[in-house]
Amino acid sequence: MTNTTYLHTAITAAIAAGKEIMKIYATDFDVAHKNDDSPLTVADKNANAIIMSYLKKYEVPIISEENKQTEYKIRKTWDRCWIVDPLDGTKEFVKRNGEFTVNIALVENGNPVLGVIYVPVTKTLYYTAADALVAFKYILLEEEEVLLDEIITAAEMIKPSEKDPAILKIVGSRSHLNEETSAFISEKELNHSVEIVSKGSSLKFCLVAEGEAHLYPRYAPTMEWDTAAGQAICQAVGVQVLDNTTGKPMRYNKENLLNSHFLVTL
Image (cartoon, rainbow, N blue to C red; front, side):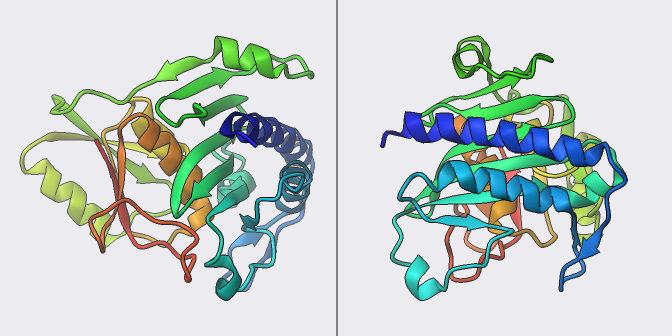
């Protein structure tokens, strides 16, 4: 299969999952909690089932937040895999603030080469090109039937902001703003006028990729499915997602699927 085929399937799957999520969003849904106390809803499960139905047609293994994880002794033999978060920002979903996404990434040898992020509430789609050299944004119309050709034809290319801005915009999270993040911001304030831009879920990556922010420091836990699609989109437009431990781009399908702290930067 070509990367174009994989990309088109991921786009279709993300939009279909988004429709299912919005059905649940309109109801008085129940909220359960996982062992780590993170929230779980039927929307997470239903969206995952829909995405799996699309991706399983290919002989590419899948890492999803809502799947049982394959042992590393098997995963380490994979040179390619999908990494999926069917509902990134479940806390935002429960709060009903609209800042949740569907994340699908294709990873090759630890590097996310394709990424799709869909925002169900605003019907906004972000995705890399099949060659991962550019990225696009498209806002779907209200029609129920989504035409893939129309999306590909009409989507607008996104690009990050220029370096050395007059006002440095730093992405902060509605759910996570700890001492390390505050210290990072304070350090930047020594030499810049700083504005904090707040968003939930993987939308934080999109803000930097489309030029609405300049930096996204993350000093709180994330998993690979939280970041893979966002990193693919950022890398496609020349934005780096750097592991704070190594100083190099974050890697995926690691033995431990927990990410290090990281910085998204121009």
